[in-house]
Amino acid sequence: MPDPRFFEDLGPATLAELASLSGARLADPADGRHLISHAAPLESAGAGAITFLSDPRRLADLAGLEGAACFLRPEHAAQIQAQGQAARILLLTSHPQAAWAAAARRLHAPRRHDGAQHVHPDSHLEEGVTLSPGVVVGQGARIGRGTYLAPGATIGPGVAVGRDCRIGANAVIGFALVGDRVSIHAGAVIGEAGFGAAGGPSGVVDLPQLGRVILQDGVTIGANSCVDRGAFGDTTIGENTKIDNLVHVAHNVRLGRNCVAAAFTGISGSTVVGDGVAFGGKAGVADHLTVGAGAQIGASASVFKDVPAGETWTGFPARPLKRWLRETAWLSRKAGGRGTKGLE
Image: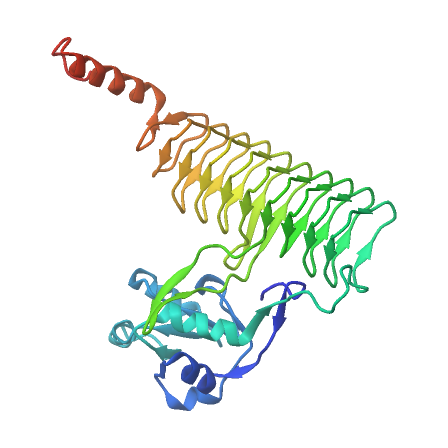
C-alpha cells in the first residue's frame, strides 16, 4: 500500500468500474463486483490489489496472485488457459501498463498542501527550528530540533525531516523521510515523480509514482540535484553519502553508504549501488544494474553492465580501466601510424 502520509486513499472501486475507466475487458464478467482497494506491482500484489503484467516471461508469477486482479494482454491470458493454470481475476487489454495507470489514479492521489497558511497548523516543529521568510510546511510534516530552512524552502505534506539539518533556499522536499544532519542545498528537489511512461490507445501516458525517498543520516544533496521517489517502493540514499550539484538519482535506486557522486552524474531507475562507490563527473549508469561496493566509475563513463566490487571502470561503454587504457593506447598508435601489433 502507498504510504498514507503521502498518498490519499480513494478506494475501493469495483473491477467493473476500473475496467470501464481503463478500457479493459473482464475475462469473466462475473468478477465485475470484486472490490479493489489499492494498486501494486506484480511481485507484491495481494488481496484487494490491482496489478499488471506486460512481460510474458513473468506469466508464472500469476500463480501467486490470491484475491488480486491483473491487467494483461489477451494472448497472454490464452497462454495461461493453454497451460491449464487455475482461473485468475484477469482484465484483458492491449495496453496493460496504461490501463493500470488509469486504475492507480482512481485509487490513489498524492497529498497536496492543504489550506492557505504557509506553515500548516497540523505540522509539528520541535524547539529550535529556524524558518526563514517564504518557507512552506505542509500538513502532517515533522521537523526536528536545530534544523534550518532557508528562504523559499518547501516541505511537503507528511514529510519528516530530522534534527540539525540544513535545507537550502527554494529546495523542495516531498514524499520523503529525511534523517539527522542532512544538508540539502539550494534548488534541490527531493521526492518528485520519477520518469515512468507507457503507450496507451491515445498516446503516451504517465505512470503514477507511488513510492518514497529515504535520506539517511549525514547525507548531502547538492544544488539543483534531483532524487526521484520510488515508482512503488523507496529510493534510498545511504548514510554519509555526498552528492554534488546537478546530479540525478532516478526512482527506486538504492545508493549505499559513504558514496560520492560528482556533478552531472545520472543513475537510472532500480540500480543498486554498494557502499563506498565513487562516480566521476558526468558518469551515467543504465537501469536495473548493480555497482559493487568500493567500485569507482570514471568521469563521463557510461555503464551498461554490472560492475564488480572494488573495480575501476571508465569509457563508453564503460569497461575495466586497464582494458580501456590498453585499447586507447592501441587506437592512438593506429591513428598515428606507429606499429601494427594488435591488441594483446
